[in-house]
Length: 350
Image (cartoon, rainbow, N blue to C red; front, side):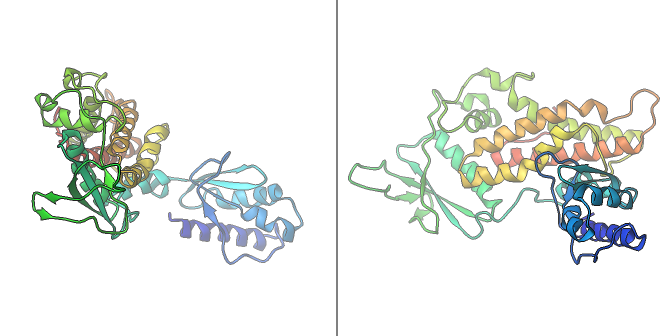
């Protein structure tokens, strides 16, 4: 159920209360619904009771108590709670729930892509002499910036002199370039790695350079290769591989994922809902580490729940299992997509 559809549902509840003689007010043309504010709950909240309180000659809480029964049980509405001075907090249910909507949105593709940098050319300057970490950061930013509608232009620049305000662009491997576009050129100066990371292999080496914030010195050691919980890269890739394994195992049991309510998954749902913002911040702040760390948060939230996805023992697949599987598959889509933006592989088996 979209906010527009829910607004109509709220107005129909008002109409029913008026027709039943419980309220004596003119039915508004529009009911505002929005995500709950501080102290709220559920998927959406509306202030319709506060709006009608004065015309009805009642308190907003009394109006909310009148409207609540007309909303509860409506198709797509699982529960309604009254909070604060009279806000109606609505939890959607089944295929109309916010969880189901999020899962479907992720499944449509290009989840997290936005227009924060729409049409902008973003010059990224790599100082000379050459630095491997700056090169890897620039490579990841090219893809991350593209998700927000921008185009990164990688250039190589001499270190700035005290009498020069900005670096002087030189040439890229494809010829002369000049910083263009509405954005200010950004000189990439992450703290260099203490040693050459290439011995770690391409994936671990890139993670070692991208996961720390630019002002932190990367750690170059075999810890990035360990297949254990202490290794954030392993947790992200393992979580992705587990989502693929769950899909295969569910198919063997004869069921597939269906978006729906998943109680107890608030942390994972919050991480998935936050992914577009993490991607936008990584692009606008030229900070791929923001994306890398968000993937770790998402993976950890999923790993805490992944054992609940499949039926146990003689348990038959239920609607709850199908909803959890759909959420797991959406998680895999986000993790694999984020790793790809960082230039790191996301194997189906690990």
